[in-house]
Image 1 (cartoon, rainbow, N blue to C red):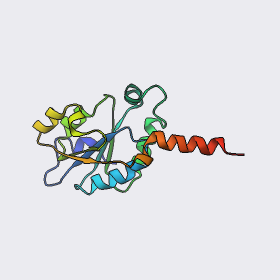
Image 2: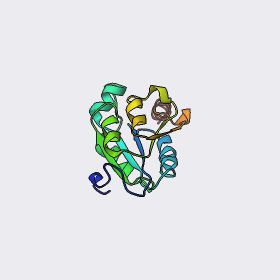
Image 3: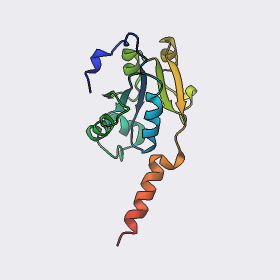
Image 4: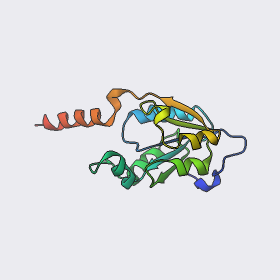
Length: 151
């Protein structure tokens, strides 16, 4: 991973898709691969542990920030990983000025915080629908079932 400051404000001649999430489910891999296909350099913003707790509750995240960032940085499709403490990635997006903002289709464009600011920057939207069976509650339910049935 290179220093993110190298790309703040955009990269001349390269397309920069950006993704931001809590990153806790297997469906995110396919989501990230699709996001990378939209441009040259994929920047992934990861909510800090504190911001995940604000968004998802005190029992989350399942993995601490350092582990989530390590897993993401090991993916071939990911070029940069950066954390943010705010509940939304608006400050990150404003600093990076990406060409495309990629979100899970379950959000819906109208529900994304800072939509007006992002649109004023000229950022395109791309929404990818995640499979229900890969969402964290379903994954945790399967894991719990396996653990309960162990001998």
